[in-house]
Image (cartoon, rainbow, N blue to C red; front, side):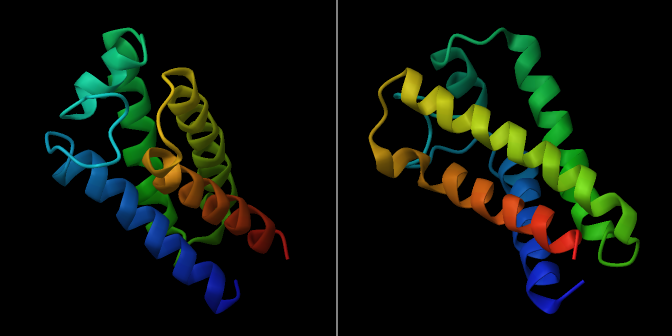
Length: 123
């Protein structure tokens, strides 16, 4: 894997873990609607409470796998591909509730980086 791929894996992996393990209860400028934490954000999008746990679990697993992928390459593509799908969903949810573009910049960046990881991991 080229060094840029490894750097992106670290950024995306740590970013996912930061949001879901350290900052899930924190208010940020990027939460959908007027949500003050991740659970409120999912409610803002009209998603069932179970989706919070499903999406959170997937993002935590993918974050860990992207970091593990620094040593064990076969997990990188599947993890990055799942993140692409989840980030597409995040962008759609922001659009659904009429958020300003600035609110979904992080999801768009994570989508782009994860897409790049998918491409780079196939080289």
